[in-house]
Image (cartoon, rainbow, N blue to C red; front, side, top):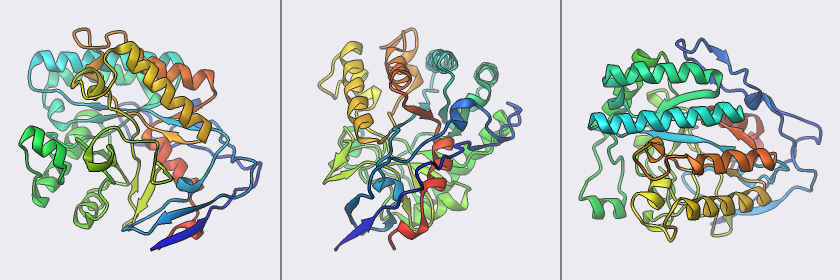
Length: 353
């Protein structure tokens, strides 16, 4: 059954403080993030309300999914993983340093989704803390589970890797261990999860998993990371609907990602794009389309791709995103900042039950 949802407009001159809550004692940034990029203002488009047909599902469509904004938003996040060997950890750290340097240069925020296992290596933690201290309030730290397991069925990944989803008690353990390690090692109380691998339509239909995440303090999840059949890429538009955030029935916000993951292009050779230049051209084209539609766009990126020994040692892909945003006045947010933004623009009157 299909429902017609009419999106609301905030009054023309209304603006939003997009600061997120960040609880990092280590970074001495308790309370509201004060970075200019977080507190920049966003105007609602000076245009009539838009009617869009949306499917009824086991989630509540957020009003911003239906909103066309004058200023588009770029949400920057990085999955910090690769822990198996000292070389892996060095690759991760090199990428982290380059990403932080670029975000400092452009003075825009970002999120690191930390894998718990990485934080069991004290030498890595010591260097990571130095880098995060340099980033200051630009840095938002959330979690990426403890050991990078598959949380639910992903047919493509299960076929390729011969791996099965873990059980609900195992998911609980993964989330709890990652939460505790990030708190103990970095002084951060996290409230967001980027799931490993990702799923078409995220965690829709997975009430038990969603309730478990909420019980463990999650306020948002990023799990809707691939297209139909769990195949990349995640298209900007599917079945006539823009790919934007939505809210599950238990109140968790889903922040989906877009396009090919950087690893799909440069590591796994899954995409039509075969080198860094082609990848940058592809992402620039994605941004042009997203910007023209007034969308939120969230790429799926990984620091190790930008290490000295890997595929984009100049971090040209990261700079492609940040330079485009600057040139086109595209607001850049972390996931924490974007979550706060959604809470301000979402109207209960426009959520579907």
